[in-house]
Image (cartoon, rainbow, N blue to C red):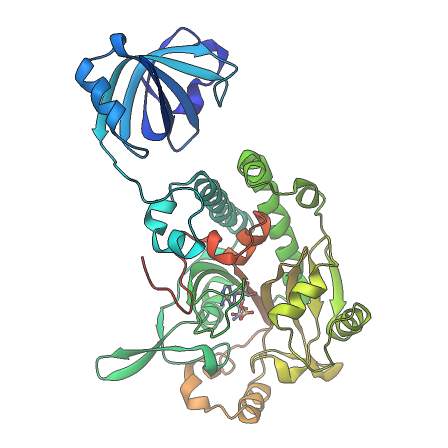
Length: 430
Ligand code: NSS
């Protein structure tokens, strides 16, 4: 019977006949023996192939081929403390399926080389661990929203206007006209709450970010939600519940992968709701007290986020940003219209912003005034303005950068490791 490696690494399979298939991870010849460590998507196992036990041609071929050769091995499972995962397969049949010679990825390759060969590097045990964590996060996100009564929906990727300011729009030719790649599905989700009330989407967002930081991609996966009748605090409660849920699911399902990546689990295990809330003005004072060079009215840059959140050991919500540094759609605080009812969630340990969200302006006159202040033409946003004319309601939403989240949870050094094929300012291949 064909098994996945992880299934058979247990005492009940000792002396049983098993077949596994995978790729050669390591190989070494000792006299009449070849030790091959085989990996599949689940784990690795050592196989010992003795010359006289298998077909002579296959033995010869096995001796010649290199790592990443695909192979089928049949044999008896034995316990062996010296083998990397505690067991060994004593082979009596091997089959080389697809040989591999001179696999380009060897030890000590540069980061640039690994990125150029990402199509091969995704096979590494590091990337495999990260991709499994990513899978769990995406799955758990859908579980969370569905359980909470949100409907999944979708906005278009070709759009004609900016959500988060014009400077990071990618322009694309569109049959003789201009279109842009979406920065956020928010405005479309806002239209859909009038049908479904609570909606979410997981979709790519595109940002022509010129900055080269550890936290910016030009294409990233964006989980966004929007809910009718919600105020800022209502949404923050859903978000902290979501973050705790995602962490809990990753800890349940992917502890082994986190350990493989040497993630400090104690911090993750200690994260519970409610998260601390801090107003922007408090954050600025906190930052100044911790020698960060920042003034009231400044937006947080990547360096400031790193320095500030190195002092945190749990996520913190920052609310009430000055109106000038947030996009036009944010609802001014009725108690102090110089600030808006928004929230960013900053992850601890130097990771920084993972969520941006807030309450939206729902009164027509206020929206038109804010658009005028920002020099925007309401005609470009006619459908967004329409929502304030026909039964407008208070509503709130947010966007979570999926790679930012995975970057933090997996404790990675750069966001580019959180996605199979990163797109950055200098990279569109492979
Ligand atoms: O610009 S955001 O802060 N907010 C929005 O786009 C809102 N329109 C979302 C909403 O309310 N529906 O981006 C949201 C999150 C941000 O906190 C990051 O986690 C992530 O999107 N983000 C990014 N991730 C990776 N790379 C880049 N360049 C990036 N930009 C934002």
